Image (cartoon, rainbow, N blue to C red; front, side, top):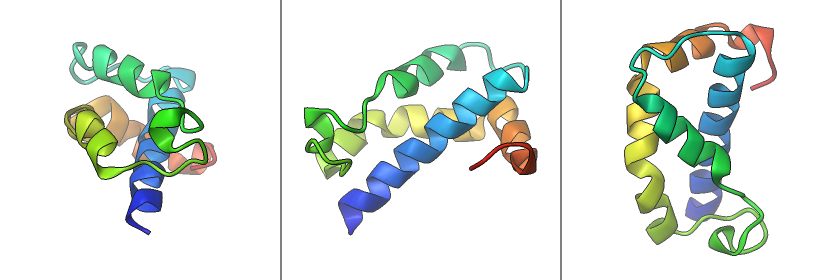
Length: 88
């Protein structure tokens, strides 16, 4: 189930990045836009996700710095605090 957990983590951060934009919440650190773009470009149905939504360890490790930076971002935290306003 590890691959499923990795996939869910990526999907969750993608939802938060998308919600931050839709709720017009500014980035806490503007340079995190790059990380957000990288996460939004990840296709969970791609070959990197084994074609069926499961992300392997090696692929997850490539995205982990983005996930950590985004989770620490004040804008993402604000979006998370407002999670009742969108489906998480």
